Every structure is written in C-alpha cells, then in structure tokens.
Image 1: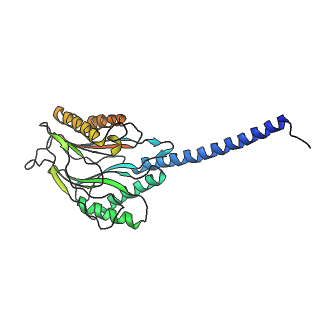
Image 2: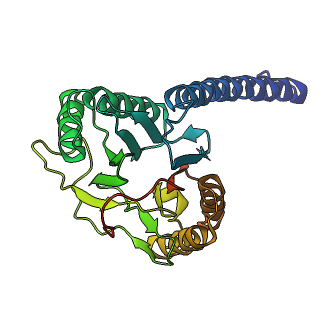
Image 3: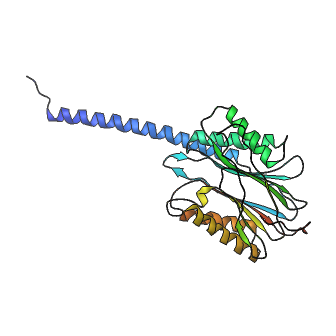
Length: 281
C-alpha cells in the first residue's frame, strides 16, 4: 500500500493555506470596497456649505467612526427654507453598514423635499415618518428638526426619538431642552410630533448632537449631556464662537469609550438686536 511522503503532505497543506489566504484577502477587499463606498456616500450626502443669516452663526463637527469595517448613519443638515427660515436637522440611523448610510441619505433628502411644502417641524417629521414607512425598509432613524427665524431668533423644534438638545444663554443659564418628543421615524404610521418653541437671545447657543457624542461604555447619556451643558454654559458666558464650542463638544466624544459616529451642530446668536421677550427653552 502506497503512502504519501511527508513532503507531499507539506505541499498539500501549503496549497490549502494559500487558497484560504487568497479567499480571506478577497473577502477583505470586498468589505473594504463597501466601506469606501459608504464613506463616499456619507461625504456626498452631507452639506458642503451652511446657510448664513445676520447675527447668527452655524458650526458643525462630524467624526465618522468605524465598527471594524462597518460605518454608521449619523447626519446633520442646515438649509434655507422657502419661507426664509433656516431648517436644521440632525439624526442617527439604526445600524452600522452601507444600508444605514444609504437610508440616512433618504431621510435627509426626504426632510429637505418635504420642507418645501410644509415648514412646521412637527408636521414635517410626521410626513417624513409616513414617507419612510412607504419605502418598506426595516430601518428606522432618530431625528431632531428645528426651524430658526433669523428675524426674531424664534426656534421651533420637534424631536423623533432623538436625544435632546442643549441650550445656554449669555447670562449664565444653561440646560437640556425639555420637550415631549415622539417615536423614531419609520416605526409606526400616523405619529404626531409636538413642537417646542423658544427664543435664541443675543449671546445664546443651542447644541444639537447625536448619541455618539455623549453615550458609551465609559459614560452614561446623563453624564455626557451634563458635560455638554457645562461646555455650552462656559461658551455662552465667555462669548466663544460657535465653531470653538462645536470643536470642544466633539472632543468630549473621546471619553465615551467606544467608536461611533459623532455629529454636532451649534447655532449661536452673536449680535442682532433681540425682538420681543426672551423665551427660555
């Protein structure tokens, strides 16, 4: 009975290892291509320029992070609405893959498109919710949408399952926006989203953010939001620019203890005369 020589066994083992290595490399290349495509989608879907208005400053910080070879679906947006108001949105799509990134684009485009026919934040989120459900996706998104009137500083806000915003005024007051909110977008039909109204006064700031900035294994969401409240309060009293505050807030995301998308959108009022009485958040 013939037997293979040891060298033959070694050659067969090397051939198998070579085949497995080639397959692993091929899978890695495919996954790397998916990540590169998702990153390109992220960059292409986020706004290149922010709207401007006398006396108001907008600033953003966005840090996409990767789970292994996956990417997330956080977004921010700011644009001028047909009625002259400024629309502001920030949100987070469930999941960390290319599908989440693509769904993020659908949500952002849907919000912009529907803002051309309805400007009320609550109705806008309700219509977007119905639109996403009609697409038949299994994904959902949390979101906050704000409408800013540059003439008066009035902010109208509606929230869909997203973490609340943070506010601060130049006289040293600061806190977390207290609003009722509604469920995430794309979960259930016929939802309503209550609207909260308040006025951004001279020197005041509002910070919109995603949970990757304030929540993780090393930090609870309460601790993270308290940290942003402190930063916003210091910035408002010291008269810091919106960009400096946004940079400080995104820096704090390093303390949450994991890699996640992190997005920050800051609105600052730096000089237009106030109209009417102040309305606290």
